[in-house]
Image (cartoon, rainbow, N blue to C red; front, side):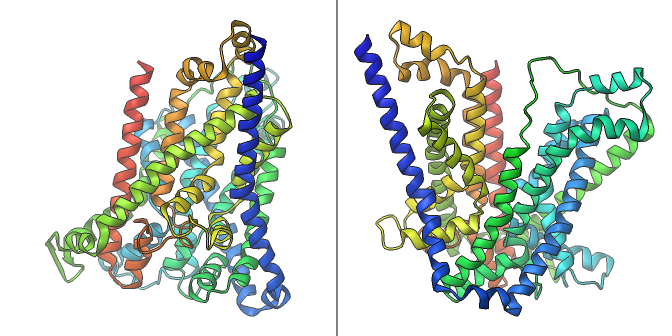
Length: 529
């Protein structure tokens, strides 16, 4: 019995050590390699250049405004869903989060199809203003980011305790005094995290500004052009380093602002208002936003099946067939392979890392946890560039393996934290009981832990799959003609002015992701029964 326990302990230590080496190779060393390019660059000249200064100013201004709008909009929508008795809350939530299932570049293209010089809305209402530039970047960034902020704020409102407000009523504390004493302290820390998470998401995105920015240059677009167009890796590394600053700030704030309050007591849910004027305004507001969410998707459908908008609106499959003939099926196959394998590899890796960091104490476990959550602070553009510089010339470069690996690390933190939190909630004495009975950790995990975490594992799989299907940032520096994912075809078609093909590609990615979400929903429902 003692020998078996010692064997399990030694094997656990070896696995943890191998995982540590794995993270050093795929996270730390590529970043170090990218940072070494700073020594080859004239950083002072780059930073003081007019192009960099303009791009930095544009990025900060548009990102700040977009973030404020996104967070305010998300809070108002979350309030309508969780604080009123508005009908069809589940359907509303699903429709509001649809923008999360298509690439950011598709949001920019959708705005062009609707409000461009020859757009659908432009022609219907005979609009004269241009969507290109600052206004387009802000609008597209809000559409791209507000669903994430909405889900984060919804989670905050969902678990808010009503008991302090009851106490305020008894003590006759109302208005601003109640806001200062109860509401502000509760929301301050979570909203800071939401703000910086949204800010980081927008400031590192190049899809929206690349598609609709026009002459309004932002840092991500500048980095993309310097690396892909000019092959200036030193300048790309310099710009990439700047992206780490807001991401690291957001990461540190998220760690510092973790809610340490006990959740051992039962929280009293907030009552929902039934006042008819409030319900009416909330319903109208939610449905108006849903309309704006659905309009780009509607434009994708229209552009995909009409001969030539707006000249010839007759129905046709020619654009779809043309897209398929230009390699659409191959690129879709590439995306499905990348997404499916990333989901398998990522889920196994995140599950295993979470198990050892949550349920196996030691310095190695702390290191694993630190590196796992640190990946949250690495933007996709930076990770993709660092992989290109570090793995160039190796056997995995220009293969599916490197795309799967970069996607796994790019989206690793959220599934890892899902598993980590689930492991933390399961009785921590199970290992000690299993050890007493002579049951190994593998059998304990297979027969006890995994059955209790099936829903979590499905959500982890879904997260990896959906994000791998639509990502453009991390893979843009690494994909080749042979393994290019479908999402990168949007840039290609748009550059060639084949907007119908780009629309159909966006619609295809959305359809695949909706199907995956529906399958996960059915599996979860079956597990609950």
